[in-house]
Image (tube, rainbow, N blue to C red):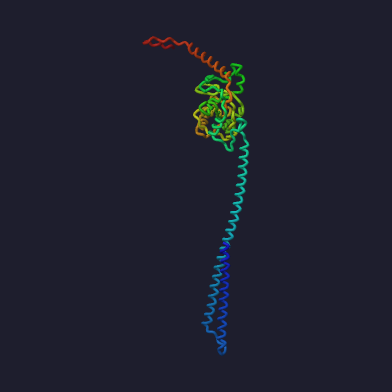
Length: 363
């Protein structure tokens, strides 16, 4: 744009010089005519057509020059306006670029601060005083499972096939634990998650418990990001689990808080975990099937199945197995089973009628 402006100025100079040359030639022509007239005797009047020709010539030269000046002046003004417009646009672009750089610097600083805070968080379980897992972003479900598999195993825990049931699923577990003083320490330090335990591998050693990531508050009719495991984080508890209609003693388990690593939870995908069991504990104040309305329970279970609701993972690391407690629980169960067998066998049945004889109906 600046080069066009300079070129226009140069053309104006050339035009001005041309006008000056035309003026000099015109004056020279008039001087020649005057000298020619003086050489004649007396004063000679110019022919009218010559005067007209000269006036027309001068007028034509001036008109053409004026037109070219106006044209160049208009072009110059146009270029000047475009130059100002582009200069203003350049200023605006520069200001926008500076604002973008400033915003990018602020975002980068915020990101560095978030990374610093995330790296400062340490996991709840350490091995040999070394951090096993430090995450700068929420881990995925497989990463949580892999972390649990990296934890040391309790070598004295019996194989899963050698562990027998200690009660049928309908037994009230707290009532069972009051039958023997040896169980009294377990009353306030046990964890039972029926339908909500998922084993990390085929040896059924470490596991993860599942709970709702959000609780539905019926009184306020709203969802709350709240954990049902708050009271058990970082504790060592006795784990009981449900399997094929029976309750089993799992051993002593260290509870690992995974919510702090994964505040948004994970999607629900597990064949070994019941979506209805999750629905039962999703409504605040509801802890069993008898208190959860069936329609509400079905809707929430479907939301878990469709991965609308996320679940919280609770790490369960096996750190012990109390054989004395296990053997006592097994003894009670075996006695109970024998008593139930005797009871079933002692039920009086009506004698069978001889073949071919119809039994009379008793009214």
